[in-house]
Image 1 (tube, rainbow, N blue to C red):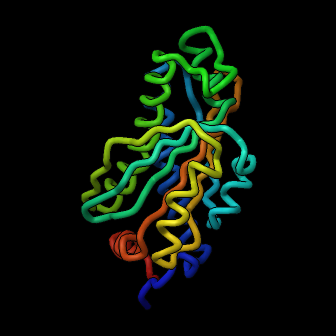
Image 2: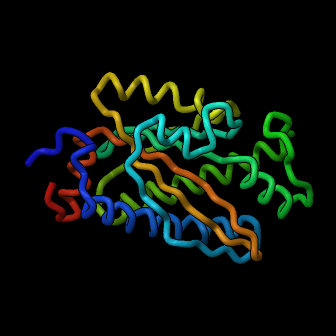
Length: 208
């Protein structure tokens, strides 16, 4: 059966995507540990199928200020990946590296912005590389577009774009990283085009 809509995914499909997320999270934790030079562990990520409004609510509501990093996927898999970095995650990262937490995302200096951008690059690439490694597919990612804005605004553009294609749901990955006893959460939103998702499962030998 062809996959006509992401809403056709069942619990088996989500379990497969959770395993991909788990591998991506492990890769991200290792890279993050090297970057901040501190041991970093992860919990098993939650992979949820949410519509855009549900994703916005999960992230604290439309007015919550966050950092959004969006990359375009091309070649065998097409779509978007949006990495959402919130206040608590940013403060923990900057305090560990620079000794000073960030109290206001809109007031980050150049050094903090550069560092957080690199964190976002690492996290996004870790998940994309996990998909490519498991499937043997070729996936190119664009240079990330970074913005500091309200969550509602960050997700508004992809929501409109994908509503036009009939895609009402996104794959939402909720991660928890444990760094020196502190737990910080990060969220990644995977918005694949339906044909790409069908190809991904086909390469993994999973019936759709």
